Length: 85
Image: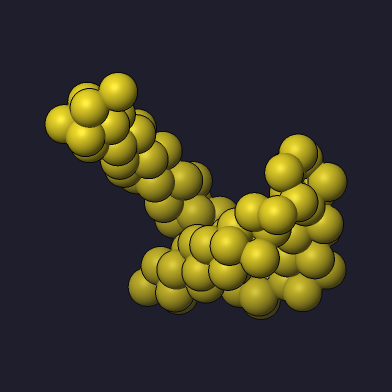
């Protein structure tokens, strides 16, 4: 496979990730509104642990976990920051 073809695949994946990011942030915004209305804290350590544990369980290639864990944690951190607005 040629480099240009591989890069085209990366571009497509990046677009799909952007679309998913936008969807996730919209849901995060709605969660933030709910939490504000119900006087709930933005940070829920139990929920974060649940998400991380579930993602680790779902990831079939454990060699990728050291790379995926910071990715998912950063995504959760960004979501929390967005919820604070």
